[in-house]
Length: 249
DNA sequence: TTGTGTTTTATTGCCTCC
DNA sequence: GGAGGCAATAAAACACAA
Image (cartoon, rainbow, N blue to C red; front, side):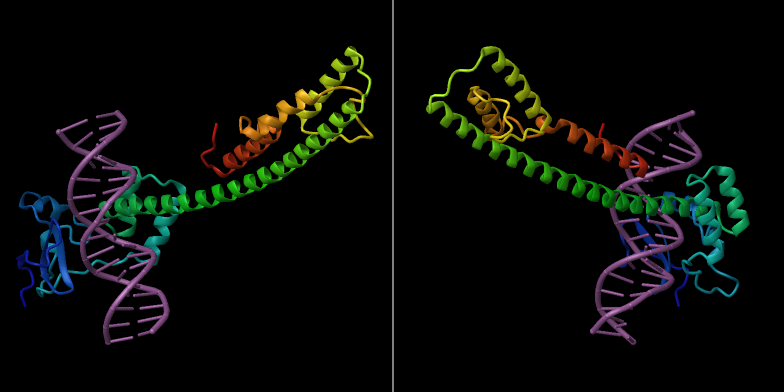
């Protein structure tokens, strides 16, 4: 058996060298300059003479931490996920570990926590997006419905004009115009022949403008329902903050 | 038993902060 | 410039299906 022999053959990986054979190998940096430093930094085999016992057996394999050690480390991590030097030393002493080992455990634990957190954040964002999308679809449908009503009423007004309806009072036209704008901007304009603000008025121009804006895409629908989107975004903002997520400003 | 995928422990190199 | 953090990665340990 060639235990303890330093070699670097085809089994070398990257910048590593191996001591020992088969399953029991000790890996360290290939660089000779760094060897001594690396031996000092080793956690399980922190010094070269720790590698082998008196019987010249193979070095101890990398071992997992005991459940007791993990429990204490987890509790400590729960309290504070950053490790100040004093706490590191205390934990190492208490658990019979190298301080470096404790530091590495915290580092890896932070990495695991970050991964889980990203997964959670992704899930929350996905559900927020779905909820917003469904609200948007519903608003879009309402908008389509209103557009259809506008078209229908426009046609009725045109027909009435052709039939020779008398011109209305210019003052009443102004009032009706203002009311129409108000109802359109609030998104609540439901107009039918029995409840019309414009018994004799000519609002084809106004209606054409509204209709063309919607059709040519110069308005994405949000300007008509800005309050709804603001509410949805506000809700999302609140939810995001509650969940500790990044939220748009 | 063995092959394969996942988790855990550890190293390296780079970056930032004091 | 040294200490400490993080991302990327290696490899042992472990889990599990075939």
